[in-house]
Image (cartoon, rainbow, N blue to C red; front, top):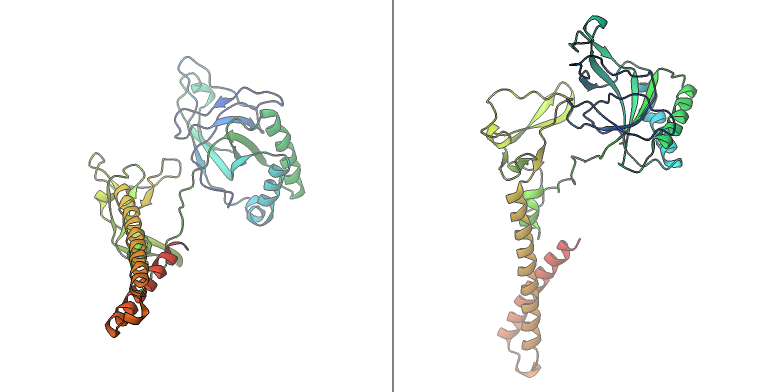
Length: 322
């Protein structure tokens, strides 16, 4: 719940309490977060006229004691610490950083020689401009003391500014019967075959998801099958796409711009249609009942039909307001 995916790593010196200047992340990463405070070993910048900061990537944590207590207990205790000290966080992740380091003989050139895996890090994202380095320092000390209670001592704490954008939208509607008053509006928003999809990079280009495939291997996940041109433009090479956690994701969206506009217009048109139908039925019933002595059998039958139309229109309008 509080560990959404993030895509970057930091490379800045440890900041002492009260130290406010901010440090940007390395330039080779996609999100380029700004560091507020970090614990751990002191960092030294690479030396030499052409030295560059080594690139880093985010990697998951598996065989570590923190994984056994984080989701059930420890993670929520960290959240409580943040709330008590009014740290307005956006994300809290347990991660490692893998970096390309250089040997002492190649420090001047900055040429990478081997990879190094960082200690496990509690990586805290906070809203930009709302948390100071001093506040982050104080909270980090409390979290380190909390880790000692769980007999965990080899974990660093890092605070950086970030904004969390959720890639999950509202759930789709369940399929409805053909007699349902909202069938024409709800049908495009149900997980039936032929869902209209697009991408975040190309929302004006859209297509359909043909069918569902079970991922297999005991997983409950479903995969969607679609044509390549729906997800990739003509400017992209026709090669296999392989997702990498440290690279920008290619997000698939439900509904493109055109399909979304069509659904909005269709919904508004349906509401307008049934509103006018209900009003016409009311006026008809009211007009036909002015002189009760002249009401014939044919008129009564007509009133019954109009009454049924009114009931149907009101039923649909009531469904729209739910």
